[in-house]
Length: 221
Image: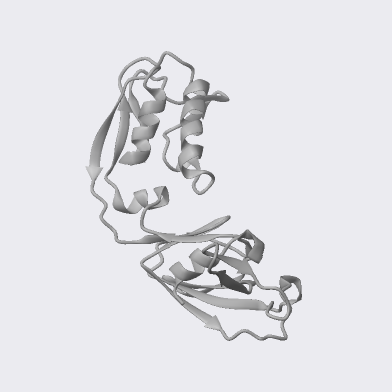
């Protein structure tokens, strides 16, 4: 079994969870992932939970190699995905640049920030904070963002800045200035509440113990 096959089989009712994360080197980490056993339903073409006596806990070791970024910790995860197409990867495989403005905004900094925040969370959810990209600060306890007449509004991957630009188009004129082309071949391993960006993933299953109950609270991992 490889990581794509595990991702295809996994669904919420299998009670998947990350039991531990081990940092084995500067660019490699190992994730211990457990879930209930399943079987493939030929009629409905999907995996289904196994009833006793076939029910037991399955334990997988996910080794992420060539790690460039991660935000992962023990937690439940009903799904996982390994993909080369995700907004998290834009920092590594999309053109980068700055979003500049040179006109007076027809809205307050609060409204500008609200518009950008709305599109940012739609694209990146809570994977990455907005302040990673925007050029905002506080002056006399008031936010300063896009209301200086000209300056840098945000910097980062072009697809994200394009979304910012569209969200602000009716209240502020901006232009994208390219800076560098990113061409990394990394992929994203996504869990319900965490991610790893790496070059490749190796999957190993520890042989299941039929005596182990499908209850992670009783599992020592």
